[in-house]
Amino acid sequence: MKYVSEYRDAELVRGVIDEIRRTVTHPWTLMEICGGQTHAIVRHGLDQLLPPEIELVHGPGCPVCVTPLELIDKALVIASRPDVIFCSYGDMLRVPGSGRDLFSVKAQGGDVRVVYSPLDAVKIAQENPDKQVVFFAIGFETTAPPNVMSVLQAQRLGLKNYSILVSHVRVPPAINAILSSPSNRVQGFLLAGHVCAVMGYHEYPPLAETFNVPMVVTGFEPFDIVQGILQTVQLLEANKIEVGNAYSRAVTFEGNQAAQKTIQQVFMECDRKWRGIGTIPMSGWCLRPEFEAFNAEKRFDVDAITADESPLCIAGEILQGLKKPHQCPAFGTACAPEHPLGATMVSSEGACAAYYKYGRVLTTEHTEITKI
Amino acid sequence: MCLGVPGKIVEIYEKGGLKMAKVDFGGIFREACLDYVPEAKTGDYCVIHVGFAISLLNEKEALETLDLLKQITDVEKEIGPG
Ligand code: SF4
Image (spheres, rainbow over the protein chains, first blue to last red):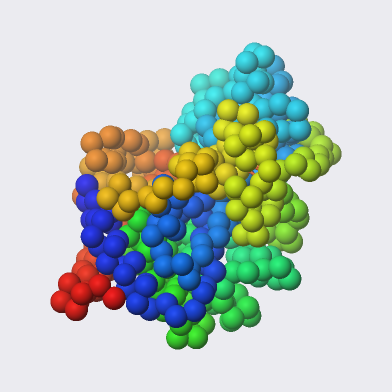
């Protein structure tokens, strides 16, 4: 398959890893921001093939994992209403709120539907004029263009029964928070390729310079990931503080300007709470006042709901790269995908779920690159 | 949500005021909105997220990346693994 198979060529991947081995002279700790990359790294065992000097820690870029508990609780309240059809990406259904999850609301008769795209939710609103249709608009910069387009489309169609429950977060403020922490160990970043496909990477050079940390835009195939690691290690070894691009077939410096313009039209920056991490100033997006009519929190008056995290789950530390999933005492015992305690065990992009699925620590066998 | 496998645009049409396309992911077909990549043509490859094309793939850049890395592996074959 074009643009896929060539980037999974085991020989090429091995070649890049050998080049990393030849380049590295110091121990370095790198963070991949994106949960999709965490999943690919663990799935293909790339971290185990790297020279021992290089440690990969997993970042907060899993949208499901960082959606705050109280927003899930708000979703549960809205989805339980008899006049509501609640639409969500499938991953969100099993994320535990304070008491239950969206699945149990569905089991108790709530109309909860899994959609592939927010435009599907707009279509459901068109077809069900007597119901209120709410879309759970979560995500990083990648899902913002689709989510804002659903609002504009509902507006164009004159729909009065469509609204979105917004939990949008952005990568640069998260990197800023991670690097500002006194316990930070991260020395280089693999930037999330598809976030940068939308936003470009012009927001990152000031961060790289302020914290003296190189960054490289990185894609998702095994080959893209090792190439991103190689470029980051080359910058670190040469003591160069730059923002590189190892995913130039999909990402430009400016990014997708049509998408950025539309995001700005509908969203504005605001403070956001990250599950397990806490509030990061101006780290997210919310609807502009002109689009208040599409704000589900206002429409259903759930603004005031707040919630506190379970003290057992260490996902917050995992998402900041301070700990690995198997260091959690609940990992694989009290917490497993069938009965998750935290969101990082639910989402396929969550580090805990990736470690569990690919048997990390449960077996110590070395993953062979031929499995790619 | 963020594992975007690139798809090939096989048909472009309009629906509800939006520019839409039929996209081929190695034999699996899905619909995607092209409003954010207005320059897209049939035959182009794009990154799709939750039903929207967010980026067109640049073939020249793609080939250059692969060439560069093939060179690394070729050099290594000549000099042996490091
Ligand atoms: S294993 Fe479960 S309880 Fe532990 S950090 Fe991961 S999600 Fe939380």
